[in-house]
Image (cartoon, rainbow, N blue to C red; front, top):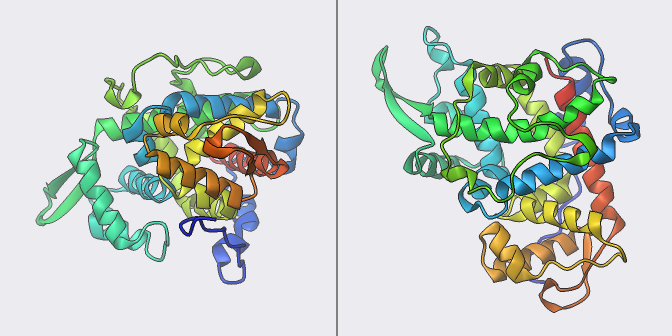
Length: 338
């Protein structure tokens, strides 16, 4: 096994109270309408497989070949940082100085995170600014303070991502009516229906990071304000899946996970092919990095590499089992939000 491939460590819930208390947080504070949808209810729902596949297909169509947005929005550390940045931006009040979104406040909010160190946060802010996703502006109330301002490009990109994840959840209306924040997302959805697992995105469309994106609008900020009080519980939920998170912490890792799932869903003989060259083209990483991603997936117990170059891969039961629990946890969490 390559030295750069690390086996994920099992969670020490005693050392991480946020993770240990995830179930309590989700049930006690993540539910707006007094009815918490459990993971088991989601997994047992007859539409679960179609909804899961719709989400996977949505994400693949969005990110496959779109190297910039894939790097920014799918790599776990950057995803956590950007989501925190948008939550802070949505909740700040001009008259309350303590809520202003500054680099220091963003770093403080994520202090202690192994995935988003202070230096990584500062570097990501610089990248977002360089590509037009973020601006720095002096606060009118105090010119000594520099604020971070997410641009319409970042809000619009995140809105499409949230819609891709949320729209298929309409199939679970019999379990939980969407809360206020989720309703705002669904009302302006540009995705269409998810009947029979169909996504509605055009796979031939140009990379969405190069399109003129519609403004996210006030409804998307409402979504972020609904999620903001439960952000720690949401991150704890993700950390409760160390194998997936360890893969997603690498550039191209989460898209690799999704591509493996999509190929496994179509496999007829428990053998799939995802050559490293193809994976490199889809994710925008080098062929060597693609090989490391596959070896990481093997170290996580998701697959067994049977031939060189990724040309014969055996999906293991843990791939689908881990994915089902991962998606069911996220679906239950989102449905419970106000």
